[in-house]
Length: 66
Length: 258
Image (cartoon, rainbow over all chains, first blue to last red; front, side):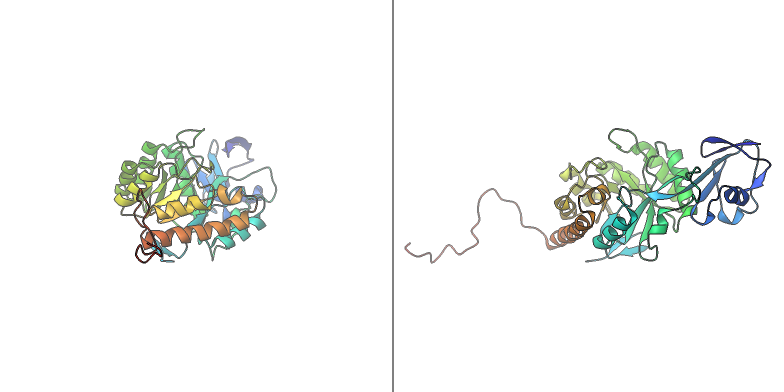
């Protein structure tokens, strides 16, 4: 199953939750924000929101800036 | 220092500092401390998926109980990108405040004011406290205020240029027109630039490169703190009018031999 993750093609074995995706990427979910198909996924929905074929996912965090 | 009120928050410091371009987090932390700032800006970027243990955030280096975090939409070139970034920042962050940037030109990083207005209207409607980075145009600032911006942030000069306040009279006019705080954002090079901004009546100054890029960022941060305070006090004190010729400070009467 193919998704687009931060602008790059990314293979997933099966549909999974946002929480599972973050865990599989080794990302600490506390400081990031996730967008699925241009809509923010609320933190409370990480465990239930499913990622499917063709989804566009953005995972961002805060970096230094002015 | 008299307090600065923006939306529902009050700040004792009138200096807002960035978190970019510091040589290390340790230097950044010391510079923030020396600046006396209570609000610092951060940017929103894609997590680097190639680095294990990714998801590390600049917030890990900042005491968020002490500094209010102002995320920006730097690097966004359309209203849509800026709006999406603001929503992500709200979800990743600690408040609904956003420093709204919509850039219109790569070389100057001047804002696209049309897109900025569009994004301001959308985000205000969604309940954001919007602080838009804009050109030093009094009419645009008035439109942003009418659109619900909590402050207006005219540039002094292009971002990172260090040129100082290029259009002194516009900043003065913006201050005279505005009913929201005016924050001079970008263009400061050294302490006198920050003082000048405050002497013109700006309510606060936001800077990053002038501190982070200085040879001694911690010392420059302290200089900026003092400069902003000096400028504010001078504005409140009310400067003397400029005059063409001298006006003696010592009595004209009683000079010997006359």
